Image 1: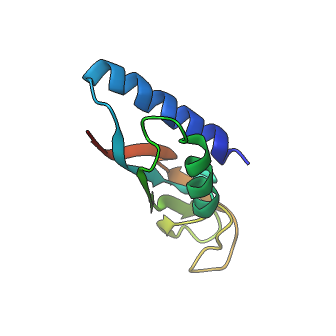
Image 2: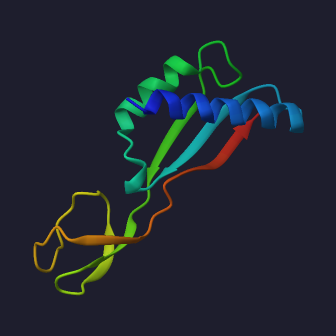
Image 3: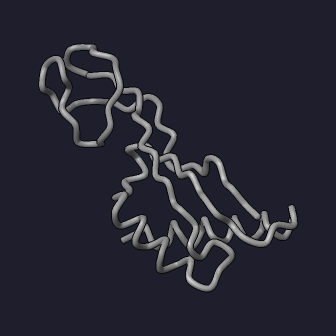
Length: 113
């Protein structure tokens, strides 16, 4: 369950930014997640609730936004978006998809007080 470690890293970044930009709390966090991040949204939400207790983000709304990756099929040359690592090619059914562009895990908008 790497989601808990990811949440702790996000909270460390938020704390660092709070000290730098003088905000006291975080109300909302947008998290953009690509397939390579291998994040389960339900586990991430639960982990964030646990990790954020007693921090400036306790009670903050965590919005997880899936972002598809650009992929190419090595068998039929299909190019398009995929939402999961183990997704079959929609054209030929092959699992030999190569991800060409994936954002991984990124912080998006953050609302603070």
